Length: 127
Image 1 (cartoon, one colour):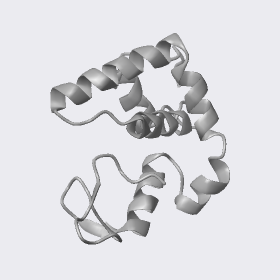
Image 2 (cartoon, one colour; image 1 turned 120 degrees about the vertical axis):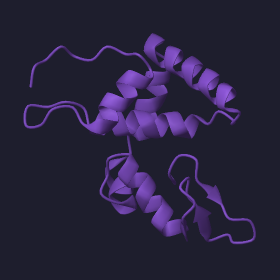
Image 3 (cartoon, rainbow, N blue to C red; image 1 turned 135 degrees about the vertical axis):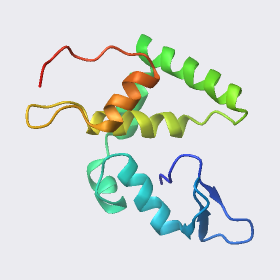
Image 4 (cartoon, rainbow, N blue to C red; image 1 turned 30 degrees about the vertical axis):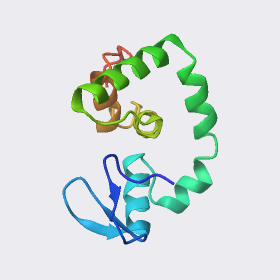
């Protein structure tokens, strides 16, 4: 059930979510926006195609690269004064995976943002 990073439920309105930019939308719309942030068309497609996302994230977190990313995410959250959420890191990782470089198009914006935010080296391929 992904909602966009930083979004919060509106107090007293269980079906409303306030986005980071201040807009208030329904929970369904927020879930669609969250799925689109992850690189899927909508929440339904994420549910259908994203069945392996949990396993993918769990295996990645157990790698050295994953551990470094978790440490950086925790430090960044502490510096910003917000709680660390594993779900936010998972959404970033899945979005990066879904927009990784290929021959038809270069690297997507989510992949570039993830690699630069966590100081990872990408493949040295000229597209």
